[in-house]
Every structure is written in structure tokens, then in C-alpha cells.
Length: 312
Image (cartoon, rainbow, N blue to C red; front, side, top):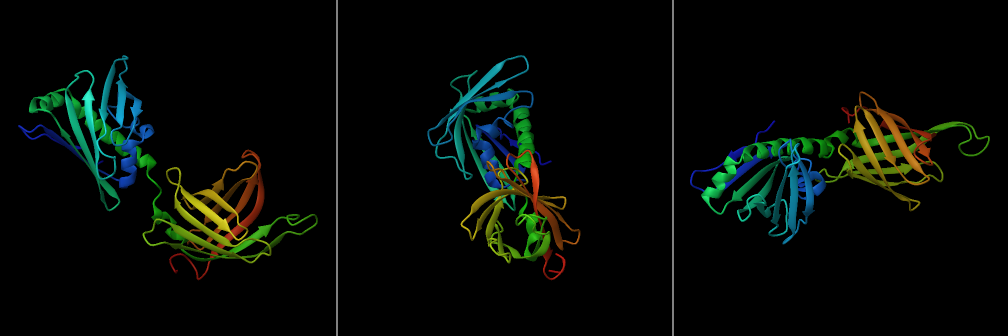
């Protein structure tokens, strides 16, 4: 684990704290300004943090209270100077147990190949105030906060786009329907369902899926796949030739492709198994009226055109 570096030069009313995190800059920034995330990492491990207010804007005020196992409370408050951004979060900091001793914190976040270097410079009113802060045991809180933030970022970081590389290319689709799917007495059928392609937009932030369906009356369309609502997921924004627009969630882990959405009266989910050579995805769609009782909808298998993923 990367360690926190604390620097306090003799005779200077400053403390500089640096730490490298294996997470994108935007996520590290959000962990600093989102109160729900902030309480999960700020302060020593043996204290719990409660946010009283946290108005992250120019001139906005903040206050939180930390409590130990014996019920002792420690309050802190301050004011934001300038609009917080990944380039700079500037705020005053004052411990309510020693009122009148205010310091100014400036935190910058530097993106480095998918990682983020965090640097916080704390400016004190005097060297004596700086030394009193060091003597108070602030090092334990700073180091615990850094470790807890690293753990939070690991849990919250978005899924790596590289995981979707296995989908890139052109695929043939085959659909299978159970007896009666198209009306009473209709037989089970399996037939070509069309073609689909996956390709990255420049920058590799969004994966574009285009599909052309051969089944009469079935829609063709496009889907835009990007970072999801939860860690290790993506969101799939789906649009088709009927004018239907939907948002699905998606995951790809351990060779299993999952796509799902929760909608009143019409829940959907797809589960597909990716073959070891990356040449096929075999799966099926299911539907539900309430998200509890599920029914098989239809089978859908993808076969890579031109061979395995490694062959292109």
C-alpha cells in the first residue's frame, strides 16, 4: 500500500501531506466533497464522523463532529474559498476545542496514468500553532484517513474499461424461442437474429454497440455503454428503431455477462456465458412483472465473426 508522506520543515508554519492513490482523479475529488463518502474515511479509525453541514461551494460552510467510544465529541468547522475542483479545494479548518487558531488547507489532485497524487498544504497562523498541531497527535489521524480513503476508493472505483475489450468486434446473433412465443400453437424456433458490433469511441470512455436485427418486426438500434452507477458496473443507454429508449446496468466478471434493468411492470435481465476462447456468448433474456418471479423470455447467443477474440 502507498504510504502517506507528512512533511513539516523546521521554522515554517506549514505541513505538507502527499499520497498517491490507485484511482482516477474525479473519484478522489468526489470522495472529498460528497458527505456520504467523506464520513467513510475522514479521521482516525476509532472515531465516528457525523456531518452537520457541508456546503461545498465558494463561501459555503462546513462542520462535522467526531465521537470516540466513550462518547467524547470533537467539533471542527470551516469555510470554502473558491469553488472546489480537482485542481484545488481551499478551505479553512478550526478545531472547536481551541477556538481562534485557524489554518488554511489547500488540496490539489494530479492525474498520473490513471492514478492520482493528492497534495495538501496546511498553512498555520504561526510556527507555534503548527507545532501544537503536530504535538496533538495529528499524524495518526492523517495516516488513518489516508489508509481509509485508499480502501474506499478501491471499493468505489469504476470498472476498468479494458474488461470490455473482449466484446470489441463483429458478432452474429442467434435467437431461440420456446413453443407458443409467437402465439398459441407456434413451434419452437431458432434462427439468425442479425448482427452486432462493438467499438470504442476515441478516449476509450464509451463503448458503442450497433445491432441490425433480421427478425420481422424486431428492432434494430444502438447502445452507448459507459461507467455505471455502482462499482464494477457499466450503464447501457439503449435506443431502437421503434423509438424505445431504456437504461440498463451491465457487468462482466468471471466470464459472465449480465445486463439488467428494474422498471415497474417490466423488469428484464440477460445472463450470458463467455466461452474461454472469447468466440461465443451463450445466454438468455428473462422478464418479470415485479422483480421477484422471473420467466424465460428468449435465448440469445452471440458468435464472433471471424473466429476467436485473439484471432480478431
